[in-house]
Amino acid sequence: MKSTPHPIQYQGSKRNLAHVILRYIPQNVDCLIEPFAGSAAITIAAAARQIAKNYLINDLNRPLAELLRLIVEFPVDTASFYEKVWNEQHGDSVEHYNRVRAEFNRTQDPRLFLYLLARCVKGSVRYNADGMFNQSPDKRRHGTLPHTMRTNIYGVSALLKNKTEFSSLDFREVLVKARKNDLVYMDPPYQGVCGERDARYFSGINHEEFVTALVELNRREISYIVSYDGRRGDKTFGVLLPDSLELTRVELDAGRSSQATLLGRDEVTYESLYLSPTLTAKLTHKPTDYHQPKMQQYALLEPLTEYA
Image 1: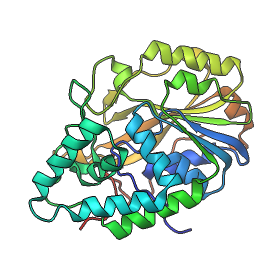
Image 2 (image 1 turned 30 degrees about the horizontal axis):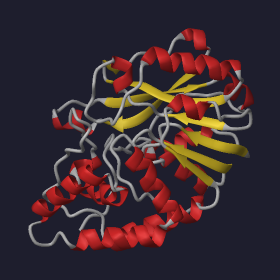
Image 3 (image 1 turned 90 degrees about the horizontal axis):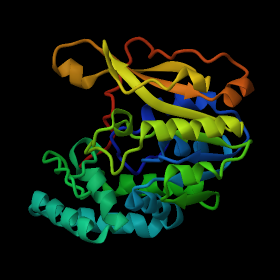
Image 4 (image 1 turned 60 degrees about the horizontal axis):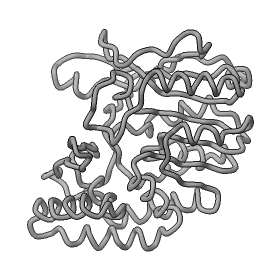
């Protein structure tokens, strides 16, 4: 299979683990629903494998959700706009980036957001206390080449056009749409787990409210998967979901932590994946922990991008 297209570089994307997560999604799902879509990496990977008939992409970050819609529904215009903005940076590229960032914060134009995501440091989204995008540019690189971006945009559009619904709603409004032959994949902000504001996320969620929503999904016998907490070495991130939900938890080896490696520590990062009781009952194989093949290493949360 050709590599899966990804126009949006987004720190925290499940792109590198998508092939593992998809093992727990049955074939012939009516609709794959992502209430916290981010870069929609799971949706794109699922569409490339024709796992679902339809898709619902939602993110409370409206410019991000709208950008995904433009990529799918208007690929030619979106790619051309990106190329125009990208080509304008070859003078003082940092000054150009700062002007584009200011214009985006003023207008919330999702097309400008695509350039910022491609050019900012490590695809790492950051917001200030007022909700304004404030990440700096990567001064070593100019962002994804226009011809590469166009190829990725066209690829995603071909996979999802005429079979995808887009929204920017509270996750609970999205969950009520789920039906028994659908699959909900949730990768909520870790910020909501610890109850503190995190500049990586446009908005967080409340842990107790999230658990309540999962209780309701269980009552309705909805199949769902949750990526929620994790650990690196002996350090844990987030709170485990309660045993009362009767979820099946597996750990996914996300590879050696690049941050720990820089500090001289050989630590592997593990992410938790929770499977709902209804989903587990549908699986023909027993869910097990996933370990990277030997000698294979991913730089956790770092995007794989072609740069100029």
